[in-house]
Length: 469
Image (cartoon, rainbow, N blue to C red; front, side):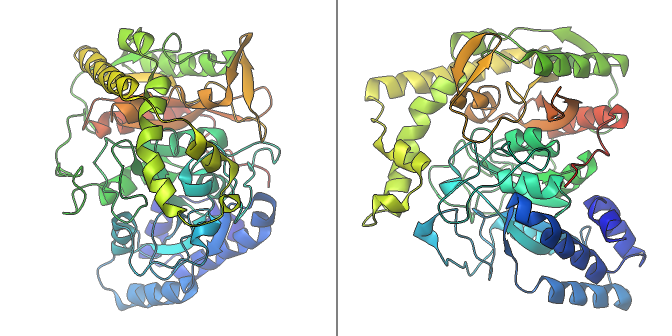
């Protein structure tokens, strides 16, 4: 029964707890047993939250008392180790923060707890959440449950591996340039980066800068993502980017009254894209056409004239370096992992190039304003390739050699512009690795991406596939 429990989604677990068909204690224990069974191979969970079983017993007593229950009552959730959890280690993947225990929850964690969720575990991250692979000097490397020689991505790679392997039904990750959508694609789960500011970043380090940074839900079903998003979104009175009320949604909702207009794009604009990934994007587009959407191949000129990854690199390094440098001030540089060390030694962007990058970011936003005058959504790749082997420094795609940083090329445009984007599996590579597609909708139109994802999920042969670990 334990293995059956651990591959139920959060929505189903909440339903079975509410109807007293499952006990929160049994649900939490099943996930703890699953962690004990598979985490030694994956190293996705770095801390089991103290008091999880005790919280489950309290949740069980509340069910038996017949009181009002929250939508996630008694359901265990996992939290990326960069997100503050009161009373549980939050070490940000770095020896610099060894032993750090926050006294308060991040607002995103507090909102899940407020819905009845039980924080089960903290998941591994690259140091400071700044890398596309999950590895660090403090808690080590995380492996992909589909193939241990491959990465589950970063920076929410511990979260993606934990959910894919049944150690958690639902979790929280953060996304600076790729970090919930990419790991979701590398492990075949679902993740949403909502419109920038839709979910407050309060309780997540660094406090500044955060204009490209997001926090978002990760799960194995679209309905879990929709539920978590509904609980997480809305201003908190502390995050200056988070000001739009949750009820405002510019999308199509759950019952569109007209055909949804969808464009699909593989190249150009994102750099070279692997043929298997390209075929998966086209398959998703064709499927949406068959489900009643108006679907066309498109080009987006602003993506072709301003390569978003270059724009991000010129702005992002300048803005992150001060926070990272402050964190390690007075410490030995050997305490810092290679990726952060490399970033700290990267030359500063000149003021002229910084201004040019800011102007390019505005052109990218304008280009998508134009695009969304004609279309409701975009279907495109999440990653240029399926999950790669650990430690890759470059890829050869369609005969072209590109640096490993190009793994960001199809996700970072939506951080630079702040557009909502969702990652969902719709294919499998010849090596048996998941391939996801990315659904992008207009600003504040999350319901469009969620609705299209639910359409794809209803016909996907991959929704009930799990890794053999």
